[in-house]
Image 1: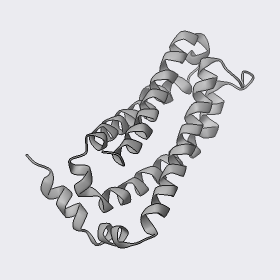
Image 2: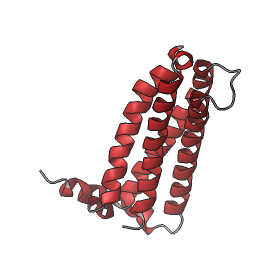
Image 3: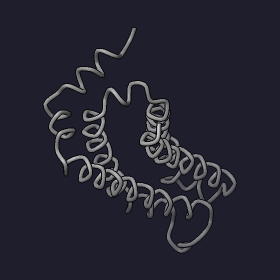
Image 4: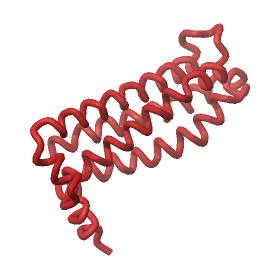
Length: 158
């Protein structure tokens, strides 16, 4: 089953056409998208550094994760909404783009990982009891999110 008709439909929506024809909409949306990614990576890096045992040692990991959760979720929502708008404006370009497919795979894996394993581990007391596993959990999360960002950047080149 080919997804080409879906991509063609997305490319021809009035939203996609409007963004594509505007001189300013795409760069503004892209900027908000990248700010969302920066905020998401920032919260993930802060929690991951704590899981690695670097910095903020007086603050429990669970408390830090809980305090940053609204920022993480909010930035993810901003990224998903703006990413969808950017996709609509370039759907046909994305159809044949290997970096786009890889970005979507990284994104799906990162979201699933973030809201299952990473969240459960960061919000439990086992993070303090198992420092080696804390580092592994943090490294996987960072790898997935940086993969999303790198593949997103690669879309512009391929």
